[in-house]
Image 1 (cartoon, rainbow, N blue to C red):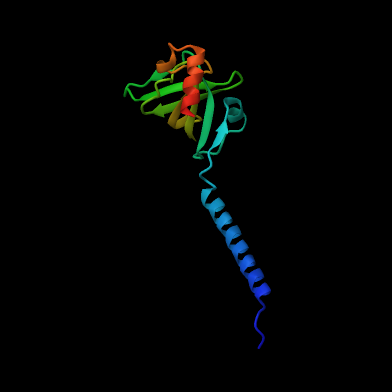
Image 2 (image 1 turned 30 degrees about the vertical axis):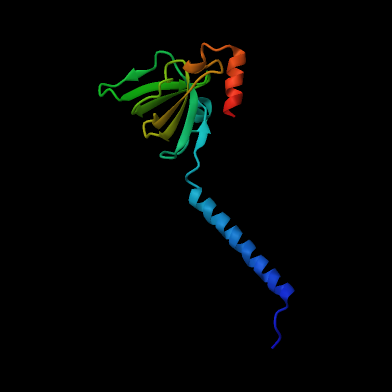
Amino acid sequence: MSAIKAKHQRLVLVLIALAALIGAGLLAAWALRNQASYFYVPSEFAAKPPELGRAVRLGGMVEGGSLKTEADGVTIRFVVGDGKARVPVTFKGIVPDLFKEGSGVVAEGKLGPNGTFVADNLLAKHDEKYVPREMKDMTAAQVKQTVAETK
């Protein structure tokens, strides 16, 4: 009986390692397939809504006059728009400090059976002119210096 040459042993080990890596990658992709959260703007959401119960993100502007607080004090209803389409949203919880009408928002949640987006989490977006309270009295040079020091 002849023994396997060292060169062939290495080749077999490399092939086994490669197969294990591919298997691990496929297993990870399969496990995470439902964890991906797709991002929609209102016009995309209206044109091709996601299936019911699928976790997605909806981003746009909170339309003026659309923000309403329910009687329970923690549920809010508002409309997210992008100038082309509007999507009604319901959120139950504490809203971020920057959340208001006319501001940008990213709502994480699912499409409800009645066509309303049911948000689990709200992320308020600020505009590019936003300056934190601590920096509002600083000059532009001081802001640049502070930002450079934190990097």
